Image 1 (cartoon, helix red, strand yellow):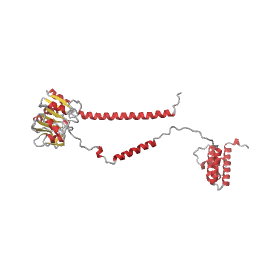
Image 2 (cartoon, rainbow, N blue to C red):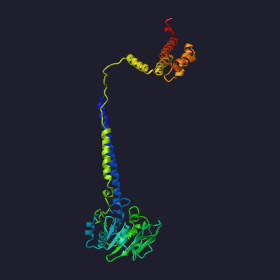
Image 3 (cartoon, rainbow, N blue to C red):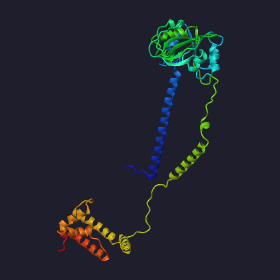
Image 4 (cartoon, rainbow, N blue to C red):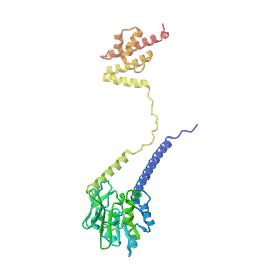
Length: 390
């Protein structure tokens, strides 16, 4: 038989278990959130990455270029890209130019003979391709080159993704929807091309239509490809967005302080503990007869004979019902009728004693008490006649 656990020990165990469960749930929630964020970052990082074999990566086209004798060097920061392009006539492939400012982007494109923007933004085509602009997405149907660009003519039809409107002097290929899938412009330092490679050159889409042929033709014009994935901080962009503190009105901080202070005060007020309940012996013991006498004196002083009569009736009805074998939920009229039938008394008379008669004074109250006692005795003797002294 195990020994009982002390109440304070059980309370401490429950409290510790509650805190432990809270900490575990918090840790699991944090781990799940971190995993989801890491998955999102990995998916974003692998997009158009030539080292990624995932569906959004471009490892397949990089291997195709290498098989055709084209060297593919992957660089992930601006300084490495500048070192790789310094003094060479290579093809520069840029995936996402968001971290780069205008001056940095223009400086990098002037260092290469060929530039291919495979994830162009509106800023890129406007800045580098003679004020061209984004024009939405294609109509989803295969499109032929329909231009004089040799790399596009040697490839078959493709299904464009994002399309662009061409600026002055820009060669536009693969018309679809409201624009063209491929834009090319010849500049003083070389050629710049732009297309949505996310729908054409990824591992999942490279084998569709003429995507592989177009990718090999555009990216394989030079013996070496410098594949640049810009990193945060590669450009000289300045953060001009207002901070949260600058957007917050002056009254918010004092209001938050007041609310926190009120919450702390409420926690202290409502969180106080009095300890476990303990039993305490009363200094004196009062007999039941004394309590009854004291209550009767109060009723007599208040001349509340009706209330006193009700208390006497409650006790008599309860004892009579118990003697008759009736349940505690039996109504007073049902108890009166059962008693009348048992002792052969008038039903109205018994109901008057147990329910209806109201004493007008002390004499009536005494008479009612005697009648209740007589009725209870009659019922008891009728139920158990062997106890009748006669």
